[in-house]
Structure formats: C-alpha cells, structure tokens
Image (cartoon, rainbow, N blue to C red; front, side, top):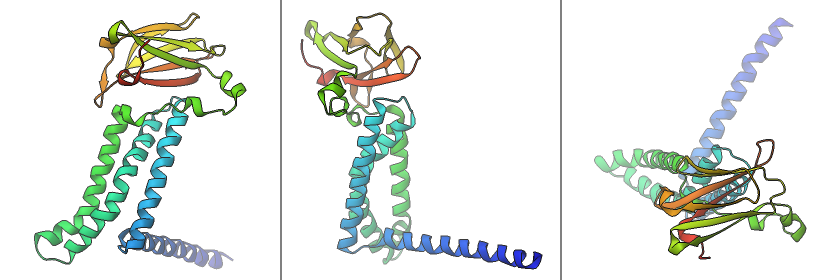
Length: 239
C-alpha cells in the first residue's frame, strides 16, 4: 500500500509537470504564430480584452473605491492600442531579425520581451497617475429604466465666472451622507449637510496626465462608497 502511494506521487507530479510544459509550448507557439490569420485573431482577442477591462473597470470604479481598478483600467486602455501593434508589427519584425546575423539577431531575440516590459511599465505609470482620458462616466447608462436611475445619486456640474469656478450639485441624494472632492490625491473639500452643493476653484484642480480633473466620492451613513464621479474641466459645460 505504501509502495503504491509512493510510486503514485511521482507519477502524478510528472504528469502535472508534463502538462505544464505542454501548455507552455502551446502558448509560445500561439504567441509567435505569424500567419495573417493568426495576427488578426490575436489582435482581435486583445482588442476585445482591452475593451472589456477598460469598460468594466470604469463601471466598477463608479461604485467601489478599489485602487486595483486604476491598473486594470490602464491595462485595458493600453492593450487596446498596443496589443494589435505587438502582434502585427513587433512579433513579425522580431522573427525577421532573428533570421539575420549580428546585432539584428540579438535584438530580434530580445525585442518582444523588451517591448512587453515597456508595456507593463507603462501600465504601472498610467495606473498610478490615473490618466483622465481613461475615465468615462457610465453612470447614466447603468440601470436602464427610469425607476432604476432615479434611485441612484447623480452629479451635475457647470462652470461659472468665465470658467474660474465649477459649481456642482448632487441630486437623488437620499442614500448620500457625505461628499468628498479630491484632486491629484489631495482632498479639496467635504460636504456633510444637504443640499449637497459645492463649488470647486479651477485654480485648485491638479493636472493629471495633462488633464485637469477632480473626483467626487459619495458615501452613505456607514462610510460605504455609493458612487464616484470624475469630472474634467475641459468637458464641464457652462452654466
């Protein structure tokens, strides 16, 4: 009995290792596949993945204050643009250079890995500094019916005094107990009493990735984030 279990354990481990090696070889084969059909398939899959992550992260970010969503949003937005370029340009170029001699051959062997490292570094930078161009308010599209959207708090903002100030108001605020306005990681103001109206000085809004923007977070009486909105000065209409 002991001998059978001892012999079975190495067999299981060997089977798992073999399956992992086979999966890795298959993944590398697909990764380096360079036919036109494979380029289209891989590029299309990355575009779909990018759209899914970017839009899904934006929707979740309106309801939960998870820092990781900044990075999934950044990954989705960047892979949406760079993914097709990597498989339509970088991989074919690397394979062509690998068949050369000298410096081109050495560069061709390292080019895909180097570009992926640059891509991941860009994801970390953009996710950390939360580019305004990635953030889209899907709040009005959630809920569908008039009754569903009426139950959700909404934020309306407009510029005043020639664009020097931004006046905002929270409507449908039955669930709201506190409003916090932040920009560039700093707290600008906090409103704790209804009606939840406030004014933001345009000069106090920080620039993040070339976008002047601020975030408005709505909390309930238990301190739970109800909604979060991002407003860019360039897109806020006049009153």
